[in-house]
Image 1 (cartoon, one colour):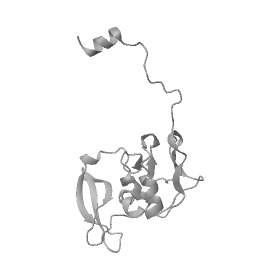
Image 2 (cartoon, one colour):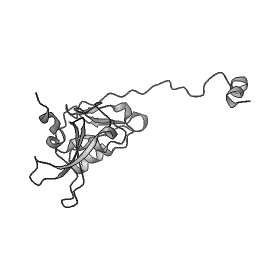
Image 3 (tube, helix red, strand yellow):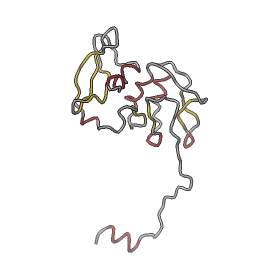
Length: 166
C-alpha cells in the first residue's frame, strides 16, 4: 500500500497550515529607472542595504521594521541617485533587483561572456560583456587583480542603452 493511499484512508481531511494574513510587498520605486525591483522575491539578506551604507555611503536606504513586518526601502520617499548603486544588481542572490535594460531578455547561462576593458573609465578596468546572437545584453565587472577593483559606475553598467540608442 502506498503512503498516499494510507493518507487518504486514515488522514485528516483538513490541512495543517493556514495563513490568514498573506503578506504582500510593494515594489520599490526609489532605485531609479534603470533598476527594476521584484520585492516578492526578497529574502531580506540585507546585502543591498549593507552595500549602500558601507561602500556607496547612501544612508537613506535601509531596513524598516522587524520580523514579518520587515521592509527594505528608503526611510522617506525619495529617489536614490548614486554612481555605485547600480552594483547592487549583482549582489542580490535571488533576483529581487534586476537590470531594467536586460530584464527578462535572456538567461545568464545563455550568454557568451567576453573579457574586455572599460573604455569610459580612465584606468581601463576589466569588464565582461555578455553577448548572444551578436547583441550585447549585459556588461558586468570582473575582478582586476592589478587595480583590485570590481565596481563599475552606473554609466558603465548601462552602456547598452548608449550602444543601441535609436
